Length: 108
Image (cartoon, rainbow, N blue to C red; front, top):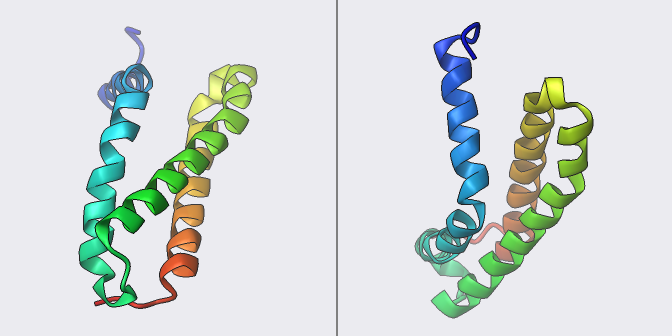
């Protein structure tokens, strides 16, 4: 690790932290995300419980995307960051698509 830049070292440490505590981070993010989606999409008429269920479903989909892409991180070990970037891109696109479908553009 001596020949790595500070940014690369930080990236490896950050991803190690995320990998180590992935389930806890995902578990804690569901109620927080549900709270903010309730605030942002009040006009939709969905209460906090419905937002919580929707966000739990989205978190499950996030896990499926991660599981599908995980073998590619092993296969492309030298370029793991490309697979991770693809995961984040797919996750963000799916997240936006799911929110648009669920709330139908009813922002408060």
